[in-house]
Length: 511
Image 1 (tube, rainbow, N blue to C red):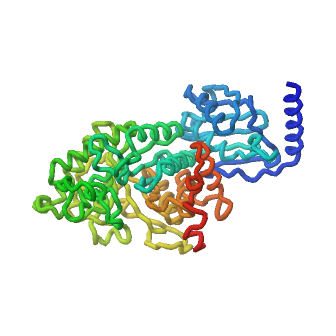
Image 2: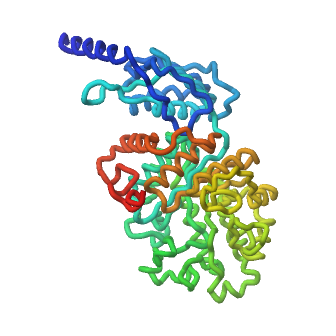
Image 3: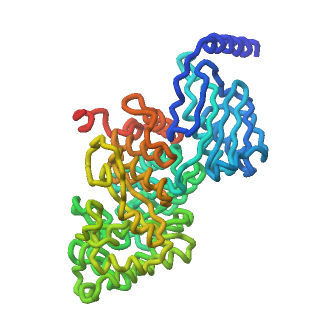
């Protein structure tokens, strides 16, 4: 015991010596808080027994804080709770965070706001610069007040057959860490349906059990997972350029479920095909713990090739019936359908240039009749509303007529950018100014490397109201944040650890 006391005293003296002269850098927080002040010379040490006051009406908030501070900082703090002092002007997801020597205070109206405060606390903290191995964490004294600018702050993630379960979990954890509140998880032939197992690859990783686990994990971190399967086009469960079909390549007996021209569409004139789709949608919705939304896809479908489908005039009436059936089933389960927009705009209509329109005249007309509780996901991948694909540096005076069209018809609408940083900022600003439901950032197959970093950080900032990210170029905090959520998973594989597959990749060599 005497030796332990002596060691503790020595460490305290060493810490005091280091803390005597400090110059903390500005806390690296994503998304950038709307109000942040800090004192670069005053340390706050995350030590055992540190008083942490949680002011929140939700009685579970204090326990959540204590549990996650122990997990993330390795110390048990003294958490006390009060229902007084919640900041009403910040809404349901806003928070305040005060860190001073010997005391941390968190204020929020909901557990969600408290979660965001602790995510911020973790990002603001750094390892103590003492010894060879980790001794603890500290951060500068600071005051933060923040709240999101949009109700729906989502990221769309694709689970391809080549994607490891660990990588998908890594993405989910990062989305929660960056204060997205929704993540769409699209299955590309990886959902192992127990009713229709032939719709997935052999030993598909997204089992019902795994979906439950991921949904619970995400919920604890403040993120709601929204499952997606495509109920019209993309029925192959694989990307068209690969020439694969998850089902038909190995199970030809199921040909009647799909259109004969490549099997890209479900065969909507076949009642059994539509029934299979509804059953899988319901099963997946249940597997993800019945979230409030379900994404049904509906983009980039082919014209019908099946003679029975072709005989239905107009074919759009069959498409509309199918969408309504899926929609009604989801509504009965307490969920809202989400769908991509492009089929609902007539291809060639000059009003929509340079935006994306892939529908027939009849498909565009059915928009007037679809239930208004469907959420329209309007995808646009340009840098600005003039259709430029590169950053021209010009001042943006954006107008998005497709978004105006859907919103004007009474649909909740999400703008869905991709990899153009300027476009992400412009579309997010438009969503904020025009009162859209929010933003759904699409990642697709660009889930590695610098592009992935820019998409995640730019969108996180933009949907919280910051169009000009504070951190640019080398030295951004992304790599640290990606590594931190990997620690939470117990990552031990070098290839699973980074957000590049290998040390030397094509995009590294090109830059």
